[in-house]
Each structure stands twice: as C-alpha cells, then as structure tokens.
Length: 269
Image (cartoon, rainbow, N blue to C red; front, side, top):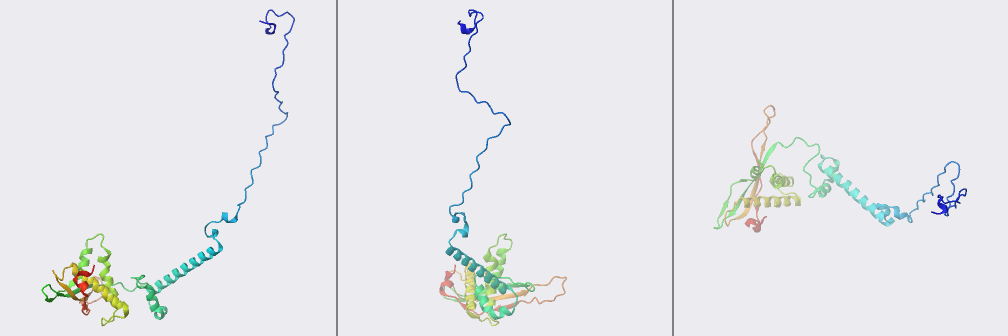
C-alpha cells in the first residue's frame, strides 16, 4: 500500500492531498421559480394554391358545362311536369281541358303510358264478362267445319283458380284486349280510327293462339276465320240489398274476321 491509501505506513500527522476530478462542470440551476420552456408556434394553414381545387360537383365544372347541366335539369323537370299533367288529365273526369285537348292527351298517353284506373271513379264493375270464340276450320281432307264456342275467359279462370302465383297473361291479356277493342269501336262494332284496327288485329292474334293451344283445327287443319263474342251477366246483389238487376246474359257478337294463312297454320307464337 502507498501513502495515498492512508494506511498504517503513512507518516503520522501528514494529510493525503485530494486532487479535484477532471471533467465538465454542471452549471448550477438558477434560483427562483421554475419557468417552462416556450413551445414554438404552430404553423399557419396554407391557402389552396388554386380556388378550383376546393370545388366539388357541378361547381368544379367550367361555366360552359355548368350552363349545359342547368339546361339539362330544366328540360327533365319540364318533361316530368308535362307528363304528370297529361296523366292527371287522362285519369281525371271529363272536363273542359280534356274536351278541347283530348286528342293530344291520348296521343301522349297511348300506348306506352296507358292507365287502367280513374280518379273519382263511379261504382266499380259489377258484371261478369266472358270472351268466347269460334272458328271456321279447313280440315286436312279439304272439308270446312265450324267449331263450337270456346270460353276463353273460363279457361283463364280455371288456370288462376287455386294458383298462388298466376301469370300476368292469364289474369290480364284477354281482358285488356277486349277492353281495348270496346274502347275503339262504336255500337255497330265498327273500328274508330287506326287504333280500332290495331285492337282487332291484337284480339284476333290472341284468340287464334288460344285455339291453337286447344287444338281446335285438329291434325292438319287450318283456321280460316274466327268470330268473337262477349257474354255479359250482371252480378246479383246481396240478399240484404233491395236493388233489382237483371241477370239475363247480354251478347255482343263481332263479325267474322279472316285469318292470314301464316297465323291459321300455327304461325302465331
């Protein structure tokens, strides 16, 4: 051990010198209350480089395209208002406007926008209308015969009865075709205008198709002409009602219509 160790060999009465440590000095803390360091201010938001960058939708379009979009919206709005007005006049009761402009209203509505209802309708239909057809057949042997009456409405009724999901054809095709014909023919069964001729063609094709399904012509036979009639019967009033109505069937028989060769041989599909 040496003298620096302060051991037993050190001369008595001598003190070992202490040398200060060499290194950086730590500054003394300032006296007084603690003051937190100031934070730098947040950066200011930068404005968009271009005003168009902040626009969305139509506002982002140029003026020319904005004008075009406004014109398109205006045209659609006017067309929608005109259509709603035409439909309203079509289903509304007869009035001065429909009497003066009925032709223009019908040209707008038919055939794409036809409506099957009326505003302020009177009593609902209380009749059973059955559409029946018969045909002149040319057999494979060259003979001509006339079939009995086929009740097409009864066939549709049998297909609907008990069917949870009846087809639109079974429910409405024949009925709408007959309504179309009666609306375009006078009391003498003469067609009124072009729509009357169209109604005859439409109904004729339906009944020829139905006769083909029923095999009315037989093997090798051809349908040469058809005749359609309706049988209208009033629905009897309930027992508690005092109303008296006739339940005698009323017949409306149309003239015979010749059938084109392609339809008579099964060309209708």
